[in-house]
Image (cartoon, rainbow, N blue to C red):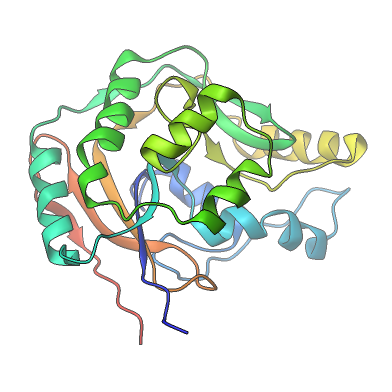
Length: 246
């Protein structure tokens, strides 16, 4: 059986020194470059072992908001080619601020989302999906079946077939995921209260979008980690953090 190729994604991710990144790493117990981060002591009402369980999924993908969903590259495109294209694209875009953030429940999980629509944010996400689709290896039947098992609308299925993911373009919503799904309403209330306290001084504030980040997943059982961060309007990396699997 052939080895699965690495997957790449275009994300928004706060810079490591920003308060949002620091708080998120303390909540998830990791940083975007696969380093462990110390957790802050929890408020009462949630066992630390349970915290590790409910943050497992966002920890695997890294603290981020998706702009171009994870994809494998087509055979005749190298990682270097892809990074060069992202750098050129980032240089053509301008920085901007989103509307203020708020904590919200999305299909049973908790995330930070803008309180209003941002045309600049939507435009950036749409262009990432469209401009970099030429690099995307088409989804196989197994992946299509897995996506469809979640239950898709006709439009979402159309987007899946065209762009490899059902929640893009008008179906896309910017969100910074903080938990996995929490089906128990009482537990979800406890976690919501903890997160509101933790992120209280960051909500109701605009979010600066200054970078376009490339994350890489070396294998299906590995976490996504930061590969490169490109400054919008410049294109050069803010800091070279190229990660390779051993």
